[in-house]
Length: 110
Length: 115
Image (cartoon, rainbow over all chains, first blue to last red; front, side):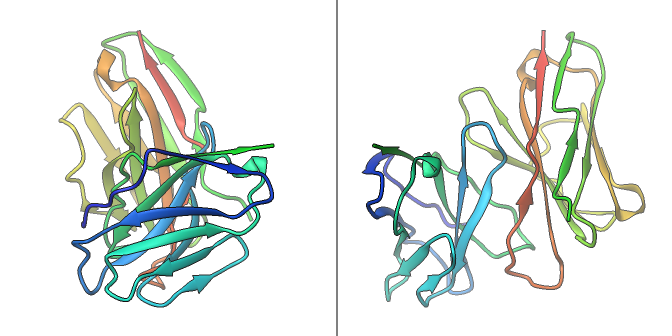
């Protein structure tokens, strides 16, 4: 699996958009970009995934650059409950394992 | 619909004892995965079942760990004998086999403490 690079921590004010970047310069053509998060001590939670087109769901938006070497997860209106560690993972899907890195610790503040 | 369920939520055992963790995946999910996070480390993959078959067990740390999934439903992960460095949180996840790019659903984890 391709390795990803994320900033270790970020802060965001409640109600503002949180933009979490991820670099995955060695991604291969058939690998997807997945985002998961872990809130406190809970199990990881899926957020969104995409191949090359931008994706949006009820939780977030995923913007993937045209060369696919980086992506940005956008939480449009962050709340305190979005405080968590966010993981950007490159994967072939259900047939392969998820390689969690150190992630980005997002702190949402009042 | 119930999510991925793990038992027990916490377990404290002495070094040298045996512990068995259980995972009940979401009904209909053929893929089942075990992960763990040891203190201060990243979440690491242990193994992957497709139904009752081990698809990938490259992450199993040593032969003290034994995973089974009889009948392709629930899975157990046995640690025998447990060592201090086995302490951590063990997560189970499952996913549907009908879509190769669907997400994995994780349980709340079992916190194992070996003393």
